Length: 155
Image (cartoon, rainbow, N blue to C red; front, side, top):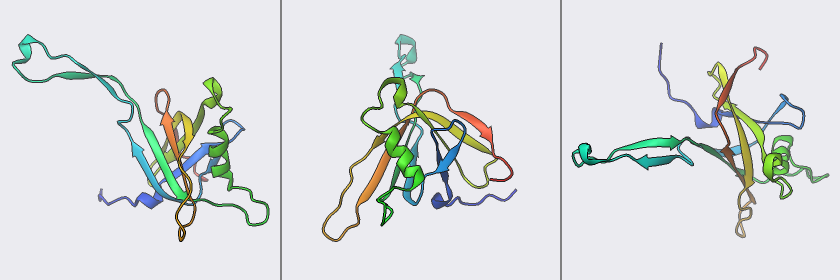
């Protein structure tokens, strides 16, 4: 088997639509960053038998994903692309409690399975300077354990 470098731009990220198990791509991203250690909590278990060496155990795992790109709108209707519109809907101020949970799935093209998170969605700062395009960003924070699903042939 030949090992090769993976292009960050090839990651596929999809958000679940309002119809369960129906997925829509989150379009035209410039940066995708997965942080598998986000919200990790540890406990110090150092004791007298540790011989002066620090010891710890992980008590909680977590993860997050940051998405960034330029803001996009349909020039005649003002509508957002479908994937971004769904992320923004899930990050809406009325989404609290269990209503704030949605799902995303992601993978690289050679992967045979999707990584699926139940998660919360938060929008980032938007704007720019005089000669910039407006930025768009979102943070997706995993809630619960990661699940997987096989990649379907027609995908």
